[in-house]
Image 1: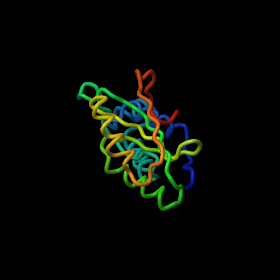
Image 2 (image 1 turned 45 degrees about the vertical axis):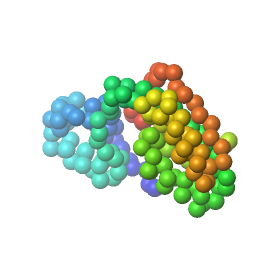
Image 3 (image 1 turned 90 degrees about the vertical axis):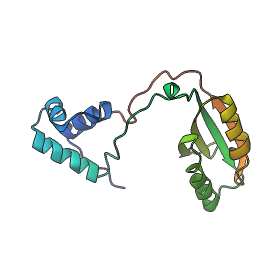
Length: 155
């Protein structure tokens, strides 16, 4: 995949949108110091290039009744391409898994899980995750509190 060349204005646009994706194009153009029409063209160009993937709301999980955040380090029985792909595909059907990464080291996957409570998380680990035919080991880490939350990319 080719890296997209960005100028200072593009970087300011990305920084502002990462901070607040709901602002109007007029507000964005004022924040980055250009007029609205070229600002909109730049945003569309960034979207078409895949630099901006999507826009979404960040929800407060605990206010919605999801009080547990945990990470699972999963080791597979065999690391064949087919098994890695099959396990990765299985994560799509698990609503409790909010993000998943294939990693190297002691584990093959790192799963970010959000659940209503400890019982729901334990049920998932025992009945779904460890029961998956490709899984060999599962190590879990329950979080205590989130201490930093920023956009995914430093601009």
